[in-house]
Image (cartoon, rainbow, N blue to C red; front, side):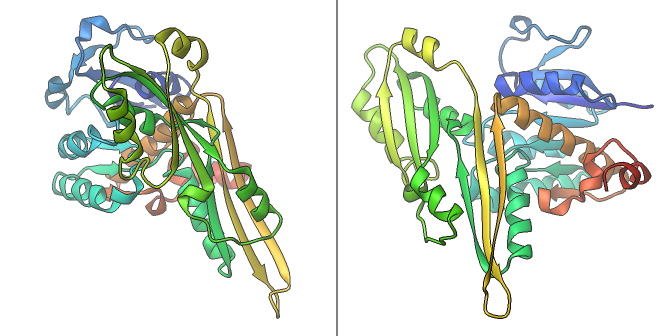
Length: 329
């Protein structure tokens, strides 16, 4: 069986998790890792696989079937995504929800012109949660949909803080407001603002001499990330950061409420719930499933950008259609 050759762009938390995830997929193999760092400083867990400067990717288009883009959504993917979509099939977890339509257009244009497939925003939110929001809406059209994240570490929000001048390290925890969740589970259908659904709590290690007031102000006013939420910022020492904030757990819920019946007398609740010990491990495994889909779609001549809404579930599985019907339908 010819294996799908996977490349990884970026070897941070998500890139390392993608390398681990490839080991769990017998139809895939790691073909190379591409980084902006000095390649000699990176030691992979997979023997015999090269680490290259990111510019070397353009010379390896015949050696990689799908490229997993592991950069941040704030500034990496908007630049890297379209460039890589010119050369490769790509998969990413772009998660700036408000800007997904324009990112889709940029990726679609480059992928379609070059007969590639670019699967965007395919982590768990956007991604798996998006699918469950869609299923909830179409199954219970007379109802309301709610999404809650956490408690856990948001990699995208943490990355956004780390890019602020004067920030050395940072972690952002997304915390759901329990009273809001409980009211929905009790059958209520409140209209909730982002601020009423989540709290964002940030732990920041500032560089020596940095303007902490300016850092806090920039965090709290950052559009698409913090400005719509009650945000708490703690400045802590490096020692405390390493001791108390080393984990990457996360989770969340998608809850759909709805009513049916002659007089809407029947109340229904659909709930999708994930609890993750490792956010990057789980996210990487979702991206790899969609890498399999991207590879298959290109072989069928279905080019351009795709989201999780555009891809039939069978494309994610290594099993044949017949196996799926026999085993899990």
